[in-house]
Length: 67
Image 1 (tube, rainbow, N blue to C red):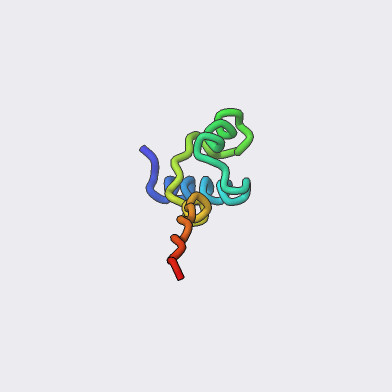
Image 2 (cartoon, rainbow, N blue to C red):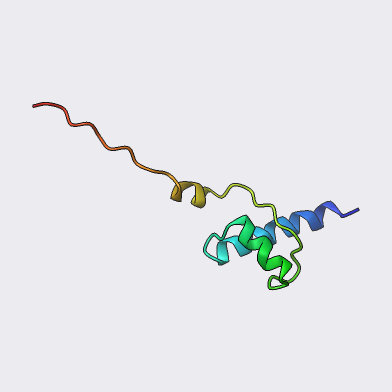
């Protein structure tokens, strides 16, 4: 059983690495954690990042109105 505080610390650390590595994907973080590149992380589950969501948005072109 893991204490609630240590789980929150792991989530915060994963979020920090996500931001430090240029908003790397969850799969990328898990790969680095398995290779022991990111010390202290075992497996990663990221929450939705507002910056990543904004970066994935697309624009819809405006329709031209006749004069």
